[in-house]
Length: 474
Image (cartoon, rainbow, N blue to C red; front, side):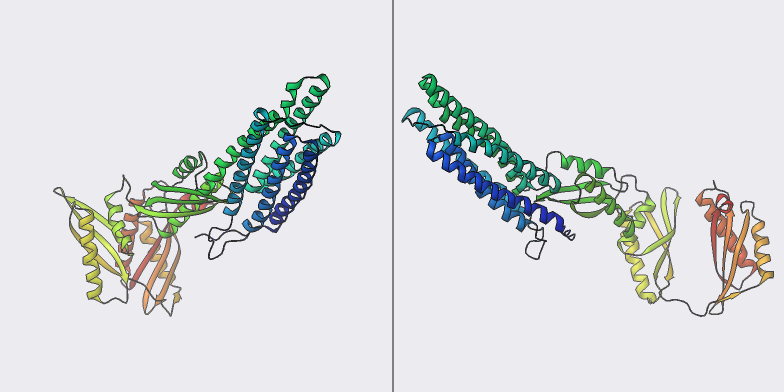
C-alpha cells in the first residue's frame, strides 16, 4: 500500500475555520427564525426555522467531520479517515428529508383542515432578509474552501446555504402575499404561506436528492462518471503496457484511491517494469491529481513474441541470464544453442541439473524446438583482485594493425591491457559505420576477437566496445 500523504496544516486550519464560522451563523439564524416564526405564526418562517435548525445540526456534524477526516491514516484506518466527510453528508441528507416530511404534513394540514392566522411583521421580513445575507456570505465562503480542497462535507453545507437563499425568498414572497391579501380583502391569499412552505420543501427535496446520490455513491465506492474509461484510455497509451486487467476507483473524503492491474511483456526487466508502473501512476494522477495509485503488474506473452523472446522468458522465470541464443532451422526442425550464466560457486552437478530443468521447460514452452545445446558459463560473484595495467606499445601496435585489416573498422582506440591473476585482459574501442546492423557488428567483433587471440595466445579475455562514427565527432 502506498503511504498516504500528510494533510497540510493550512488545509486543516482553513477547513475548520470556515466550518466553525458556519456553525455560529447557523445558530444565530435559527434562533431569530424561531423567534419571529412563533410571534407571527408563519408556517413558512417556522419551516425555514426547522430547516435552519437542521442546518445547524448539519453544520456541527460537518465541523466535527472535517476535524476527523483530516487525521492521517493509521493501522486501523489504512485509507485515512476521509469517509467521515461522506458519512457526514449522508446524515445531512437524512435530516433534510425529515424536515421535508414535517413541512409537507403541516402545510397540507393548514391548507385543508385548519386555518392559522399569520401576522406578517417588520421583524419577520428583517430576519428573512438578514438570513439571505448571511446565507449568501457563508455559502460563498464554504464553496470556496470546498472547491479548493475538494471537501464533500463543506460542499454539502455550501449547497444547503445557497438553496436557503431561494427558499427564504419564497417565504418572503409568501408573507408579502399574506399581507397584501389582508389589506386588499383577498381571503385565499392567506394560503400563500403554507404554499410557500411547500415550495421550501420542494427545494429541500431537490437538494437532498442531489446530495443523496453523491454521498451514497461515495459510501458505496462508486467510480466517478467517465473517470474509469478515461483512466483506461490514458493507461493504454503508456508504452510497455500490453493490456489492462482491472481498474478500481474509490473515494474517501477528498482523496481518490485507484487500484490497477496491468499486463506487461514477460521479458521486461524488473527495472523496466518499475519504470512502466511509474508512468502508469503518472497517467492516472493526471486525471485524478494527488490520487493514491496502486499498480499491480502481471507478466503476459505478447502476440508478436519471437522464439528468442519465448526462450528468454523461460530463463527470466528462473532468474538466470541467457545470451548468444542461436536458432537453426535444419530440414524444418529447430535446433537451439545458447549461453547460460550461472553462479561461479555452483558445482557442476547442481549447474547441470538446473540447465536440464531449464531446457525441459523451454521445450514445453516452445514445442517447435527439437534439440537444445546449452553452454554453461560462470557468472562472476567476486571482485577479482590484483589488477595491473600494462603499457606495451609494441603489442598495442600489433592489435591496431589487425583491426585495420577489417574494412568495416574505421579505427581502434583506448586500448588497455591489464594483468589479473597472471592473465591478460584486453579492452578497446572500435569505431564502426553508424548504419551497420547490430548483427553484423557482433560478427565483426567476434572475428576480431578470434584474430587478436590468435596473434597473442596469452590473451585470456577480450572486450570490444563498438562506437558509431558520429559519437567520435562530438
